[in-house]
Length: 248
Image: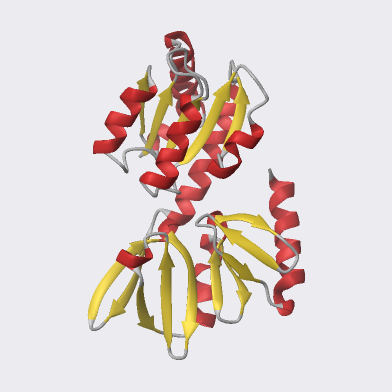
């Protein structure tokens, strides 16, 4: 199921986007493989109250930036999702009548930014991109820790790091979810290549979708952590990035 929220104080905008999302589901035959659950909110306060109780309620949020009652509330809501609720996996797509909010959105790392009214083509492209990621990463990774079988959804993993015979799982909520298991990280890399994990060092296997920026010799993750890219992998990563960007 793809769970989608629309938050805009203009009810006509919400209805228009709901109709386009439903059209996307029908025309791409998603309804046979993936049900769409769409919920509209006409104020940021309503979205906040719902989200406070149901933190993992949505995969994708179309969020207006500026609301009549309190200015740039959409930016504040995005910050709340990222920082207070520590949710970096929800795809936030900002919508606005204006184009001058780039710096305000930088820290939130939105999935995209569209000018209203949002066309059917842009909604269709966004849904397709989100579903591609979900199909690769909304699956549990199963491992054995201290004799107990455990699992974690791949989209929650920032990276795997090898420590001798053990592989550590590093996540956003590392104080709660960090864990380790025995194995060979080279074999793990082969297993997770189709789920968009890649090596930056022979001991580091990183989740592509949790990287916010790439530089020549390092990258930054969604939690602000910087990791060095070893010289051995720099050319390979540049080529991967080039191929990814050409696919968009």
